Amino acid sequence: MEDFLEDLRNDHRDFDLARLEDVVGTNPFDLFNQWMKNAVDKGVAEANACVVSTVDTTGQPSGRIVYLKELINGEFIFYTNYHSHKGKDLAGNNKISMLFFWPALQQQIRIDGLCYKVPEQVSDAYFRSRPRGSKIGAWASNQSEQLISRTELEQRVHEYAEKFPGEVPRPPHWGGYAVRAELVEFWQGRPSRLHDRFVFKKEGENWNVGRLNP
Image (cartoon, rainbow, N blue to C red):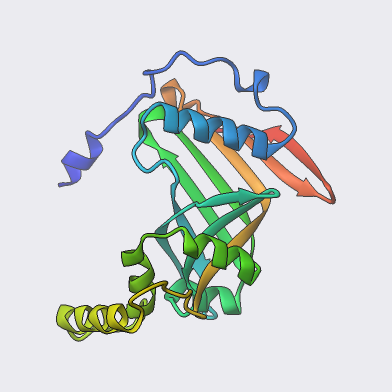
């Protein structure tokens, strides 16, 4: 197994890219939108999926995949159960990190910042756009709590489907989080591990941008 892992190598020679200095600009959101649109246009599967990392009150970090659903006024929005593991972490420590990784493009974006619940009307609007099955699931799943069996979950789905035969309201424990970025790093794979890394750091109302060693 160890030999197998040692033999896994990628020298990042698949792309002939322009210098990042020529496109990086002064606003991380412009570059984020550019990279995200390119990932979608290139057919990257689930390009809006990212790892969200939180830290609990003991200092234990944990990560999981979520979907970025909106970028509103420079804030990255995702939705979840507020009673979930990550929701409990964020209630005690609202520092958060998001990581997008697109191996097909040899790119990643890291976003560090602070996380806040979005206004209820924003969560309501997004919840209305969800498929009915996902709405029922938001009621039925006690996210991150122990489940005795799959049957228990399916029974709750059935119960809520009967309870809400028409429009499904948003559960009060479900909604959006907005990540206010304080640091955004763009990473582009390059040969010989000499990768491009540009980092934007928020200082007051402005962003300072610089290159990092790979």
